[in-house]
Length: 356
Ligand code: ATP
Ligand code: MG
Ligand code: FE
Image (cartoon, rainbow, N blue to C red):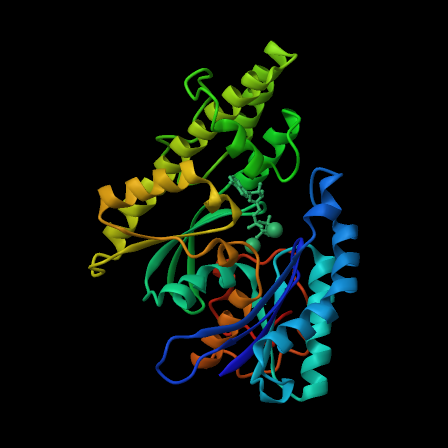
């Protein structure tokens, strides 16, 4: 099976060809990602209109490059898989319409993919992981814990009640005058900071409710920064280190709770696994915290290569392959309408072509 994947839901324009032949391991034949970070940097965040226009300008060339890199001609592709949501609607329209046009011209089936399903199934592409497992998705737009039980069988156990974690990093960076994207710059500054200087709150820690919250932490950072302004480089470093420590602590508490629940509800699983996805998974302090937690709880810790953790089209092509293989892509999705909101647990039923 060879599937061409297309991803345009946020600020990456991406296309990829993934192949699965018989019982051998899947192969990523090409994986082209064009990040729009520079276009958005001046605004300190993703601007939807700029993103949509950038996707229009780049997508045809990116698809051509992905096909050329893969060595596969369009005629030998079995299906086109495109992200149909959730995300910024302008980008979704560009990606899905382009995919529909390619599918129609080449007379191939189109599979509409939920972006979150792409993240959820990536560990099966990279690590051949068996169901069920637990997914922690921490990106600029999402902060979720999902029990991944099968293709199309996802149960969201936790989400954020306010900001996404990546968003909290980006906003913190902005407050401190650090450049966009905030996450890597906060981590860099934190490396020379004192994590014990500020006692920031650990939102939701110990709560019986499973969800995340980060806006209270953000407010505490703003108050601390305002109180000692003007900020020296050391002040910024100390705030970043203290913020990062609070985040890791809060995250560890929430994830630890989910690991326990997984053990209780899916006790048959001898070698349970936690998979991380999303750009925040690049953070070494967070990664170390999660890794330690997994060792203590007897979980395998799976962190796919960063290029496949952040937004990419290989995960979309792979989700297309999983759906083809599971017989969950039999209808044509030519009438599928992009959905800016599309919760992962709502797609359990066969989804292709049922987009309204
Ligand atoms: P999605 O729609 O999937 O949420 P996104 O583009 O917002 O897409 P990603 O590209 O997966 O998400 O990740 C980007 C986010 O990850 C940004 O918020 C960025 O600040 C954060 N990030 C990147 N590197 C780090 C890091 N080292 N530490 C913390 N956060 C990071
Ligand atoms: Mg991104
Ligand atoms: Fe994503």
